[in-house]
Amino acid sequence: MSDLSNMRILVVDDVESNIDILIEMLGEDYRVSVAMNGRSALEDVASMMPDLILLDIMMPDMDGYEVCRRLKADRQTRDIPVVFLTSLSEESDEARGLALGAVDYITKPFSRELVKARVNNHLELKRHRDHLEELVAERTRELILTQDVTIESLGTLAEFRDPETGGHIKRTQHYLRCLAGRLMKVPEFADRLDDATINLMIKSAPLHDIGKVGVPDHILLKPAELTDEEYEQIKKHTIYGRDAVIASEKKLGDDSFLKCARRMAFTHHEKWDGSGYPQGLAGEEIPLEGRLMAIVDVYDALVSKRVYKSPLPHSKAVAMIMEGRGTRFDPRIVDEFKSVSEEFRRTALEFAEHDEERQTLLK
Image 1 (cartoon, rainbow, N blue to C red):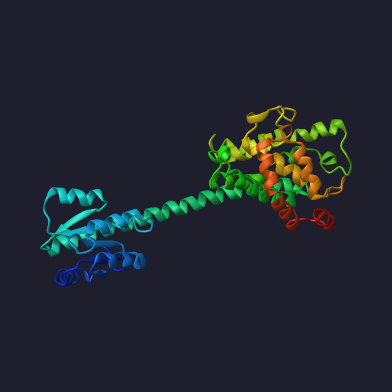
Image 2 (image 1 turned 120 degrees about the horizontal axis):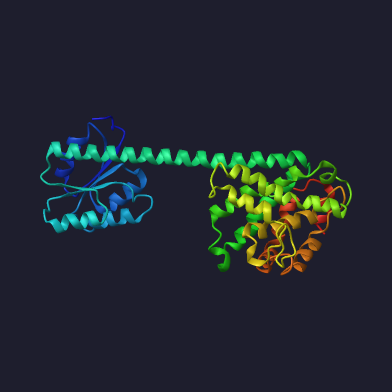
């Protein structure tokens, strides 16, 4: 027998002699606790979280079936294995207990060898299952870390090229969390947004302008308005961004976590009426990631100081986005943006990089 001495067993029986027998059989090998009725058992389980429950069926007030039913209905306790203790021998009684989620039966009078063997087997299974869950959890953490590091590493490239990108990334991530969280409560968006999807969007936000690494410095860092020809070069950052993400995505497969980042980088300059770039997509043709980023990207650009422009007041930025409702932006998302616009202002104030921005945001 392997060392299971730290594992806890809860014995539930209203007959003291039965409890004494089981303690004598198991007490030297395991940590054994007892309860003499169903209600006490439920209280003890909640506080001690045993590894195995030996549960008598025939008890007054609340029988073992009801105790088992309540344990299996509770997310905190449903995975604790339950072994019924019973003198019943009818097959229907055994089937009822197994249907409720019990893993085994031990009949009275108890056989020492049988009790010890079955308890040991079920505790071994419990330990292996717990270990497997730990391995799965650890692997999941590693995968999430890999995602985060991959996205952050790619996002850092854009920060190296454009000194204004760092604060922009932080702000757009917070704007996205706010706006997508609001949309998640709207019926027409609820089936496309959940916590996992929103978290992936937030992680992907730093890559929406990754394509700027392909734009020449004299254009990207120009301290003045761009010429038409230069603007055409800037517009290509959406294509460069898509291609940069695709290069990494090929190694991870078509269903990788980078799909969200690719869509965001490629489509955040598309417009609801089809007049955007690079593809001229319209309406629902534009991925949701792109439609969301379009609004948060424009808002941040409007309220931020640039070498070629001063920041606009928050109220003016909101008014300009409202003017773009149904033309530049998805009208339903604009409506929800209006509802959370003050949260955008607070985020912009918190992560503002210039005093001029802070002062203007208060107007």
